[in-house]
Structure formats: C-alpha cells, structure tokens
Amino acid sequence: MPTNIDTAVEIYSNKFILGLTRALAPLRAFSLDLSDDIIQEGESVNVPLVTADTVGDWDEVNNNYGRTAASSKGKSVKIDKRKICGFAVTQSMMANFRPNQWEGKAELNQKEMADTVLADVTSLVTPANYGDAANKKVAVVLAEFKRYAVANLRAQIVKAKLTPAKCVLALNPDFFSALLGDLDANVYGGTEAVRSGAIPGLLGFRSIIEVPQYNGPGFCCHPDAIAVGSRKVPVADTTPYKEFGSMVEPETGLTMNRVVFTAGVIGKTSFSTECWYGYDVGNGDALIRLVG
Image (cartoon, rainbow, N blue to C red):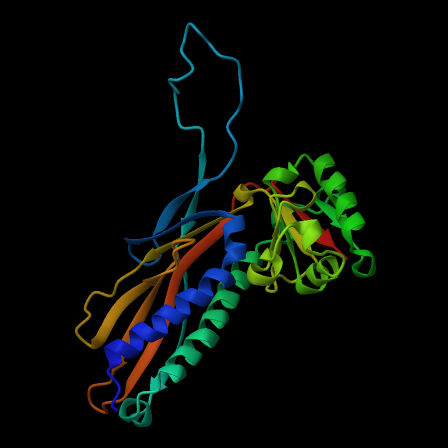
C-alpha cells in the first residue's frame, strides 16, 4: 500500500528515540540544560553546574532553613552547534510502505547522531582545558586494566581531590571491555553493562560508562566538569515543509527537529533529523584525564 508520510515519520521517531536513550547515556555524566524552549540559534543559555551543597551546623538564631542565595553556579553556553542527517524519500518508498525500512533507518541514524554529538562534547577533554600537571592525569595500561587497576585508579582520584561517589569514570571501548572481562554479575550486581553500557556503583564510583567517541583511554569527572545545553530553534516560516516538528529523548530532554521537506518545482521529498546544542568547560578542576 502507499506510504502515509505522517505514519512513517511516527514509526521512525519512535524507533529513533528508543535507541537514542541508550546511545546518549554518557551525556548524563555532565551538567545538562536540555529542553524544547525556543530561542534563536547562536543565543546562550545558562546551564546550572551540578555540585554538592556545603554541610554546616544548625544555626538556631538565624534559622538555616532560610537560604540566603542559590548555591549553584551556572555556565553560559552558546547554542551554536547544528548537526543534521537524513535521506531522500524515493518514489518507491512512497508507493510501497515498508515500516521496517523506516525503523532500520532510524536505528542507524540515531547512532550516527548520538556518536557525532558525544564526540563533539568529549572533544573538550584536553590538556588545555583541564590541565596537564601530574595531579590532573593518571597513567593507565590496557593490558593491566582490571579490577585492581581501577581500585588503584580510585585511590589516585581521591588524592586529586575528586570524590568517587560523585564521579563518572568514562572509558573508551578497549578499557571498558578489559574491565568488563574481569567482572561478572556477582561483582557489579546486574546486567546494566550489557544493556546500557554502564556499571553503576563499582568500587564506589557513581558509575563507570563506555564512551566510544572519546579519543583517549578515558577520564573521570564530577558532573560540573562539562556544561551542555540544547534548545528548540524554529525556522521563521514552516510553509515550505510538510512537517517541521520535534522529537524529545525522555531521559535527558534533548530535543531534535524532524523535518519533511518537498522541493516544490521538482517535487522531491526528503526527511531529516537535526539537533541544535552547545557545550563548554564547566569546572576545570572537576575532571582527571586517563593517559596511556
């Protein structure tokens, strides 16, 4: 039967978001301000840096329940990154509705989009941004990267003034796989590593995650190390488009536009997905790099 483009787009979107939730898991290691609020492309948003509040003594006279000011810091992030992927909707695709074809495209495209965004964000993790002194990096060896090596790494993280319980340890696939090969469900307590690419709570870390997009062994950070923001940036006139809507990844709130465009004169239709976002260094002292 002929393709109903609205139905096809919904099938694509559902599959796209389902895969994106797992693919974007590493993004939740950072401070985020992702929403479908509308701004102009290139404007800045204030991303609250996620940090712990100071613990003090109860003050009976001044009443500690009344806080004098917000304790969180923010980072101004410009929404100036725009990534897009898509495909031509052929006459054959319109004449013959194949749901698996739209789902297959969505499954592949969401991974490409997530990989591109995460590679872009983690490109911030450089000596220039987070320092190259002895206390800003930890040497690791792939052949020795097992539980005991991570335990030693944890001790060095503490010496560098980071708190493991607040830290995400992000590893590239080689190091994550080396560690995973030395574990079983009795050690890390579940199937999260297989299902979501994350090992929660191991050796006191908030989480240990796989970040295939990072160019290096990995890094360890508090959430305030990197600030990431995204917004919905609409076009001024949607008349030329069959659809100019959005998809929202529920775990992070990352919004992506979905666009069906038909070139009027030649009548060719295309479907695209795009993401507007930005990122910046948050707290330069909240991240330690792993170096080989």
